[in-house]
Length: 131
Length: 408
Figure 1 (tube, chains in turn purple, cyan):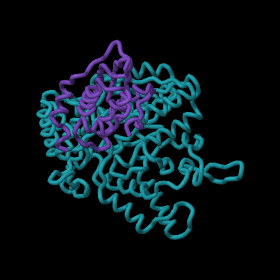
Figure 2 (figure 1 turned 120 degrees about the vertical axis):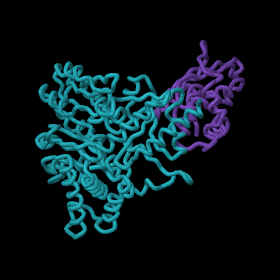
Figure 3 (figure 1 turned 90 degrees about the horizontal axis):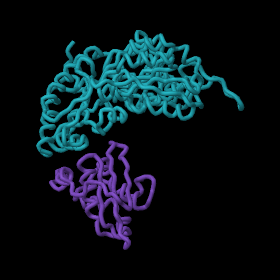
Figure 4 (figure 1 turned 60 degrees about the vertical axis):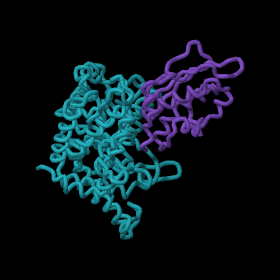
């Protein structure tokens, strides 16, 4: 519990390194967390070799949702899309370095859902994407 | 009469629990659901231990007891809101289902394409979505009474809408976010002058104010037990007798019928016409016990206590730099304080307060359009009931200062 607001989370929330939009981009997707209205958009540029060359997130929400988005986006730059597709709940929790209850897990996983829905070209960021 | 809060708190065993070792619960989320006194818990326990049986059919002792407990609770609830008769109280699952009952039964029998329904911008989703569904199905029109920057309904805007001859005006008596207590009697009088029927969402008002459906002249009035010291899973719809009698049944099944043949049925009389299937019997008993409990303490005393706490809370919250409050001043609202803290998301505020055992709600509180209107995705909301104290407000204030420090 005391780890929830680790310095790294507060730092990424207050001073995100990858907040913004990419124009042009190859992939862009946005969705909300219906529970609290948190909103996240993720833009990606992908090279011909299938590697993510650049990534940004935008939106608003709690420290957990915004920090996890920043950490996630940062972590996928330079990675192949096939690897991005394999990311799951544990990948995000590892990035955050914390354990979360069911409610806050939704905040933490919103960015991964948005990312995967974008990569898979889906219309909606469903819960099944992160299980 | 001033409430003896120390004595009242003894009735609520949950208030003694710790949320973690050494941290006692400070429950400031009664607008979401209230805590339950032992009187309610015991009434439901006794029912299951002694009287459990299905109602209305059996002739054995237990069936008789269960039926009278279930129906006596209805009498108590009717009296509590000053309905003329218990036949006007329909048991539902909650306020949402009560509103849906009106939307499915009355509205589908009475509204056609182009008919106007007036709602307000401060409605809970439960008084928006049923009407949006009907709009999609039937092509009715929806208009919304605007909310002023102070969090009040714009009555002039309402009067202008009334010139379009609405069929129904459906509004909340007390906002679950802003706390605004709307002038229900005036809204209803104006609606009637324009020839409209009225439905009041009383989820927040019945637990906290003296509500008299006859003096309000409400046509329909919806509320839930769980926000007024009762159990979850049961609520009520009050309706004027002539209206309820004219309406087709809602759900079909046992208990709502007088006679069934293979190809036809005759509906039962009120209130059973609207209560299909085995209902929430123990919950009805608990609902009745909650009404007894509140009546004994006195709704006026409860309202006065909440007013005192709310006034104090708003005053203290206002002192904190970066805190922005939503809704009108204490004299125009119930025990709700929705706020934002600059630079910190409401979820984080709630999470950090929880470390000190302080339970507040964070989010859009099922009133997303209202938050959009104020240009914010979410608020933190502290709410107060008969068992809350000024000391608990102080804990909240200290907690918010801690949040500020962490995010400073």
